[in-house]
Length: 173
Image 1 (cartoon, rainbow, N blue to C red):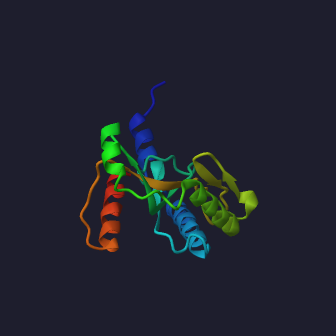
Image 2 (image 1 turned 60 degrees about the horizontal axis):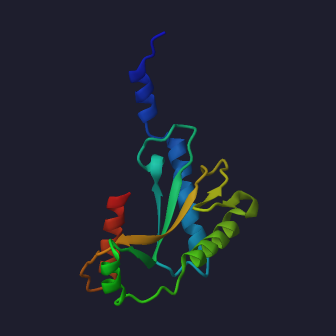
Image 3 (image 1 turned 45 degrees about the horizontal axis):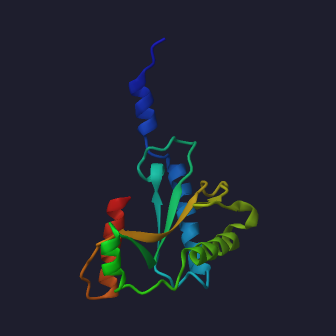
């Protein structure tokens, strides 16, 4: 029996329905609101964004979650190409005062406060938040950012630096 692959691929390539789109936006917005309601996170430089199959429109309609990234720009981890570069560049870096484990714990507290303990499951790389009729299920990937070294930019202000970092990470997604 022959299959109409063109029709199948066309169906698969469609973006989310209006309802699915609204539920995905609600999930992202609620995660953003959870962060803003957290005394520990609200003043941090955090970006919340969709990523993965949903963002790239390769998800399966009516059967997908939405990957939501939560990226904190307050700390970064450089990746050095070799030990010589690491030794040379590491002299100019100050050790982080905000660790990944702290960020993940604080994000978990914020998500639990917003969605309830039973709705939030902590994984090794992400949090799973159970869906409801208002939002789709958003696995939340918590990230402190990693920059390849040597990575440099010239910025006169913190705002300029943040714009450059946002552009860098937008290209990577």
